[in-house]
Image 1 (cartoon, rainbow, N blue to C red):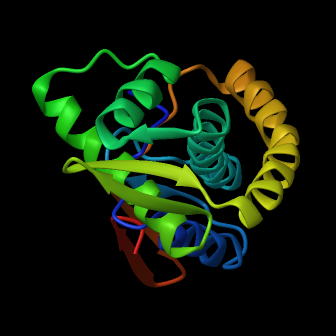
Image 2 (image 1 turned 30 degrees about the vertical axis):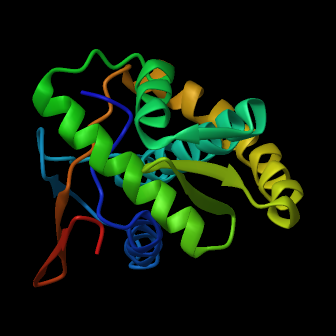
Length: 178
């Protein structure tokens, strides 16, 4: 439904998508949600990767613009950026996913967190800010490519927390991007 996939660790998810790409030509795969993907498997993998880069880019841009944001405000701004109207259930999923990105970016040395009056605030680390902005520039080409794929294949991109692939005589399963 949304271009904000639920994931436990997006770095591992990206790594898993790269591993799938390196398997070679896949005839079809079964996403966690939606219909079997029987063609354009490689494009679907790329769209998933681009989606993850877009979320990372969104977070970095929000912090570049706002200097610091609390977790709840970050969740709100990310949801607004991706035009997600949240129910209680959707809020839980979006909140968890945004926290995953924030934690991973912190672990990768891009963000830092400060607790003020028991409220967590996220900021860009100064030395990583320029590197993050360079990554944003590199991602722009991927975003343009995504728009072309969306026009070609439609606006709804299936993203799920589990993926099954048939590779030769094996069935591969990836859960939560791990």
